[in-house]
Length: 337
Image 1 (cartoon, rainbow, N blue to C red):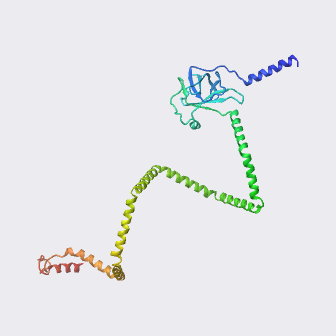
Image 2 (image 1 turned 30 degrees about the vertical axis):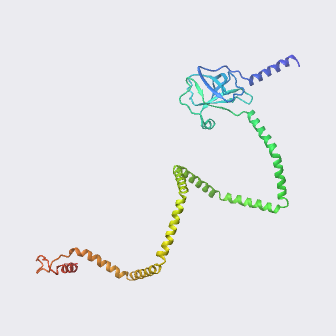
Image 3 (image 1 turned 90 degrees about the horizontal axis):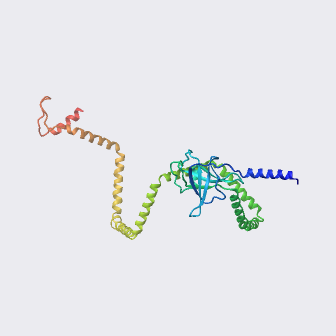
C-alpha cells in the first residue's frame, strides 16, 4: 500500500474516532448540584449534564461516599430556576456513546422508583442535592440479564420439557377419540365464555362496585370485626356461665311444661274453642254489632245533653230539678235529632 493510501486511511480512522468520541466545550456555571448514585458505570468528569437534551452543565467531581456509593458533583448554569424535586438519571448518548446526567422533573414513574424520597419545595437557584437518582437500562445490562435467564431456563427446563413430552405421549397414546372430545369440550367452553362476554363484564363491574362499597365502609367493617372479636372472646370467657344459664332455662321449660302446660292443656283447648265460637258468632252478626256500636256512639254523644230537671209547664219555663228530670233530659234530645 502506498503512502497516499495510508494517509487517507489514517484520516478516515481519525474522522471515525472523532465522530464516536465527541469533545464538546465545557458548559457550567456557579450553581453546584450534588447527586448520589449506586453506580455511575464509566461516567467521568467533564461529561455533560442535560435537561430535555440541552446541555446546561458538566460533571466536576466524582467521589466515593462512606457507604460505597458514587457522589457526583455537577456545575450548572445560573438563572435556570430548576425545581428542587428534580430527578437525576444516568444515561448514555448512544449505543457506544458517552455517559451523561439527565435532569428531569419528578413524575409518577419516579414515585415508584423512589418511594421513600420526600419531594422538597423551592428551586436550585443556589444549588442543592438531588434525592432521587436512577440509572437508565443499558444494552449490556439487558443482554447480561437475558443471557442469565436463558441459561437458567436451559438448565432447569430441558429435562422437565422432555419429561412432559414423554408423559404426554404415554398418557394420550391410543386415546385419540378422548383427546378430540376434550379439545371439542374446551372449544365449546371457549365459545360459551365468548358469547357471555357482556354478562362477564357486568359481573366484573358488579364486583368492582361491591369492592368499592366495601372499601368506602372500611372503618365500619373494622369496628364490626373488632366488636365481633370482643364478643367471641367474651363468650369464650363466660362459656361455663352461658352453659349453666341454658341448662337452667331448659329445666325451667321442662318444669313449666309438666306443671302448667300438661295439666291445663284440655281446659286451655276448650277455652280457645269457646272463644273461637264467640268470634264466629260475632263475625256472622257483624251487621248487628255495627248497629250496636253506632247506637253506643250516639248514646255517648247525646248523654252530655241530658239536663237533670222535671218537665216544665211551658216551653218558656226554665227547667227545675226533679225525680224524672234525667229520663226526660235523655228522651227529649233524642226526639229532636
